Length: 351
Image 1 (cartoon, one colour):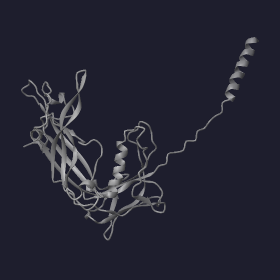
Image 2 (cartoon, helix red, strand yellow):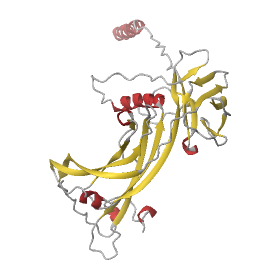
Image 3 (cartoon, helix red, strand yellow):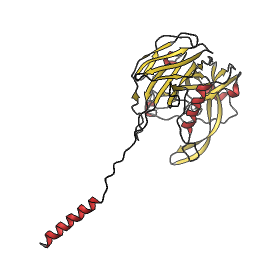
Image 4 (cartoon, helix red, strand yellow):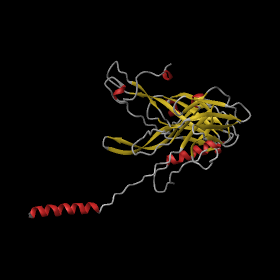
């Protein structure tokens, strides 16, 4: 009987404790799904497109979120005093120009699109920037301190690098921006005791410049100057093939991209400004205060490529102390050392 009373008392105690806990339902507000309109229109059809989608809620650890597609009735770029440029849908959220057009410098253009819900979005009138040709690509040697690791030891050493520059002449027609994309192929040597060694490899470099490469012409208006494409070490004896695309954008495009660039370069310290939504030049008709991410960018693009000889760059700067790396030893294939490279000679390096 005593045990029965103890069990009943224990059960009542459990029920009493449970009744004191209030059930809490958290009502989490869904993240606002802002519309994003990213439009690039210029003299290169391959880089001319309009993308329309909505942002997706942030999920920790997801590097490539699935953006929400938007139904779009039409996309058109209007020319002031000229024919409109129609765009057709090629993917769920990507539109390409239907025909060709002449992006004349100084002409004004505007983006207009309507969603399936009947909302109309339009950009401000923007002026097509001038075409600026890359005249030459050169490499200039300089010295900087780098951290060298040998076995378990680390020490600081002075090494030489080449600052690769695209030579251009600014047209001097006002403030412009230069957005540069550069890639390359580097020649890598190894050594071996094998008579049939594939000792030379070639490795592709997707980005010569780390991060967004954006330059204002404000200090150089109306004169020739060099746009930095990035830097390569001169401690190797192999050649380097560089390929670059230079987009000229107007002041509106430069100001927007410059804000994006500054946010990307923030170190994340407590002294950095907090990230914020950058307002572009596109608005919703009738709701001008609504946030629309992205922007409408006009550009003129030129491209250039060149095979650079590190030996020549070093010979033009004999006043600097050039140190060469020792050739790595392999059994018979350079891919033993450079796993992402290939022994097949690219056409850019063939005689």
